Image 1: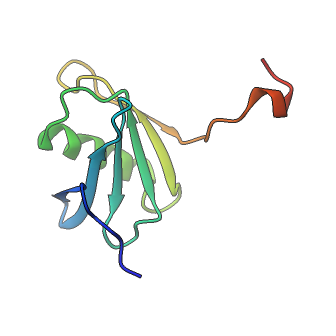
Image 2: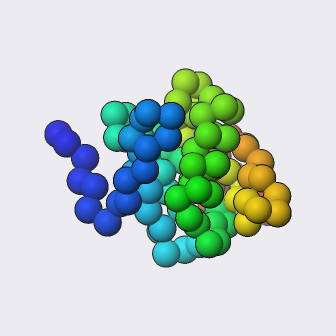
Length: 101
């Protein structure tokens, strides 16, 4: 089944096509067209431009997003002041289930 790319913007980085969209909660979601199960989340994302998206995608690739880490989160800020820092994506958990505060 083909991915539904409605509302996703295309971008090419290093010869590979990706799709990205603003999730309306202050984050940007990025997926490679050839393997859309991989997910890059950039948050908080402000003033996202194609150039800044390219930097975030290149940073994620350099940190293993397309090879080792299928879901990754970048802590994004205005890339002109400070480059994003790559960290593995860890889905949020309900603290009541884990017993942590």
